[in-house]
Image (cartoon, rainbow, N blue to C red; front, side):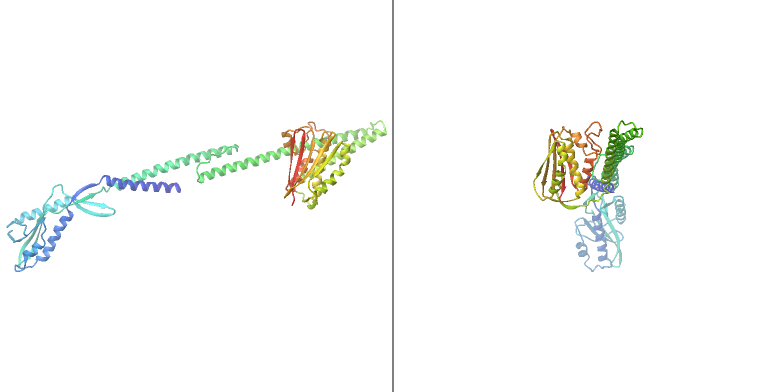
Length: 473
């Protein structure tokens, strides 16, 4: 609708301009006698009214000379043409009535042939223009002194300049307006049609699966909005498909990892039970070893299954947090004391750096103990021996920051990005030497995120640090 209006207005403006220009450039100047002829006719009518039924006693000459003008002569004659009265500028004493009548009729024919009807701004005007000037002759019968006489007026009608503009200019300006409308409409819509074809081409590519294709955004009209919406739709669709692929890949990896981690202890337990069933032990002590190994394997299997269930519930956000206001520095103190024996056996020591005492945070104590216990146990497990683990607590305005740092083998950037993935272990072989299920950090990350916090890892040469930031409220 906007394009149509623009074309219509432009066509009207250009057509109107051309109409005025054409009229002015093709204007003709003519000598117009129409008003002069009308003036003579008016004199005739006026004199007829004044002289009709007059008598010789009336002041006839005065009436005639009062109506005289430079360009006309006035006569009153009898039937034979003898001049009875005349204006002061007339010399003739006798006129040929027949000749006067013929001249009057001839002049009327000349006027009819020379008449031009001019129309300007809706007003029609009559123009009488001669190539050669003719003398006007007006003759009419009047009753004078109870006799039939003739009133005759002769003379050259006065002229004036008349400007005649062509009447067909509107036709040409209309044609020009239509041509301009068609040209501008084609020019504007042609680009839009090309853009529509570009959008259709983009839709065709997107429909065939090329979701990365982006339609060029041109202009600021509805077509641009349409193209932008199509791009957004394709982007959202691509994102959803990528998420579905990632979810499918995650599901596949989860099944593979769970199968692997369950198969290993189950195979071991099955092997030892088979030895016991077939009584392939050499002594009672060896039997107890087989039973003990099987029991330990089943405990690890139980831990793996419990971790897997817990991670699944945390990931699906089906666990409700039981938040209470806890003293975080006290919780960390208690946890380090509980790990004292394990640290001593592993030839490691925990150095605490508590910046502020009595730091209270609103959190689920049981869940958060699991996070810090996991971070500290990882530090004990992977730190170089003998080693020192640094535990730092910083109180900020609206949050707290807990840092666990230790020395270990260098961790590259790629490993840092994957370290919170489930079933990720730094060991290239998925052995059970470290005793981990591969779910600890993934569970810790889910718990922290449930508390609206964040957890991340940093590596600097042989130092690795895990940082947990939690909101106070």
